[in-house]
Image (cartoon, rainbow, N blue to C red):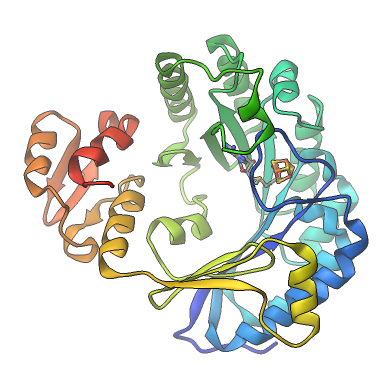
Length: 371
Ligand SMILES: C[S@@+](CC[C@H](N)C(=O)[O-])C[C@H]1O[C@@H](n2cnc3c(N)ncnc32)[C@H](O)[C@@H]1O
Ligand code: SF4
């Protein structure tokens, strides 16, 4: 593939859905027991990329997400990345998500050779009883080995994903995870609150989420602990060493256009949102037959865009430009929230204070009228 239009889309997501097993909390588009389809899937993804090439500019960020992208195997990943190589802007960020037990020295070396600049490891916790509740296959120790392999291979950035508000998680467990992070010293940490997604196994029991007070305490404990370890809390659930923010995720929160390819992938380009349908076989056969994958398309109208810009933009530590985002539904609420110390306004921008960010959902309910 050749370099695209310099004004085209600069952010590409590729969904690689294969997993060894489905974790009980996961509601992503995932395929278990279909490793036989990996070659055909790669061909289909490359075909979709060729079909979309005209929309792409020089790529500032590429994100291979899953699923478990590393289960594609080093050779297929290298083929995919080689085909993207000519489209990358100088200094492009190229991230691959990986489960810790799937990264060894050989895989890390292959990713480095293929031009990967960032590996995002789904550690989730260092505590065995929490890994068990989450149905994770990784054992304590796997994530340390994976971090070391990524670093030894010379990949510039390593990020770890951790989980908050897991059933049975105590303040001591959280302190242990913080100590673990300090010991590993990743460049970036994503610390997500566990969502009990409808239809997921964990939502059917027997585990109950921690009560709201404990969940809020654990969140604040994580923020305090990471900040005092020198990480910048640059997005509600994301923390980075200075300069190590995830540029791909920043593009989402800044409501930039992005192209998603692969089964179940979403794109937002020029005021249109497209969602590729789930269903591996239908995806593969549509592209093998020379067509587009099955997908839905909808226009993102001005009102939806305005709400999304507020919801996403107030997740960030950087100020939101109100003229760009559009007027909030309840402009009077801004002065009131400012007086209560929940947000700051300056030169036409709004940014949540530390306390406001801990309560972002409630703050947004006052600023916007959600249906
Ligand atoms: C979809 S996974 C893909 C990467 C890899 N397979 C893994 O499990 O680490 C990416 C991240 O999404 C987050 N995630 C998935 N399901 C979630 C849920 N129900 N609630 C919160 N975070 C979730 C996890 O932190 C996970 O690391
Ligand atoms: S959390 Fe990750 S490993 Fe687990 S099923 Fe979802 S995508 Fe696969």
